[in-house]
Amino acid sequence: MKLVKAAKKRTPTKKVDTSKAESICRMERERAVWTKMHGFVTARPEPYQRECGECVITVPQATLLRTMDPETPSPMTALATALGCHASNVTGLVDRLEEQGLVERRPSEADRRVKHVSLTPKGVEARANLYDALYMAPPELAELSEEELAVLETVMGKLQKA
Image (cartoon, rainbow, N blue to C red; front, side, top):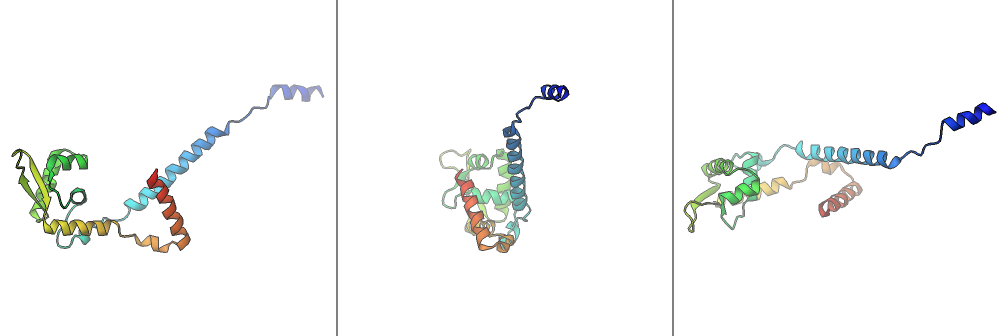
């Protein structure tokens, strides 16, 4: 009997803090979900080349076209800022888009050092095709049931509001 009491004294009950472990599990689950979402989106081949008709453009060129406002010419510096890149990168992108007749470059009336870029009619059409291709639902969504699709739509709506 004395031995049992001694053993109890040596091994005090310790309260385990599960909140830290739960937090780590939550973070790991969030990371796993994000990894799967990212993988799903980035695994889709860019539909730009097949959707632009006769023009062949790269993803950065397509991004530039999508950034542009069809109604308003943009200064090269504004395009660089919108793309988060150096102005020299935009110059190369605009050069290649201009060669295909998708954009045109003109000097600013207010400052001849500034070049404005605008979409040509062909560029406006290519941009519209890009948006159609970009927002075309991938075929994998057709495999979901109506209920699964509704749940996914609700969840994505919550994420967009956050």
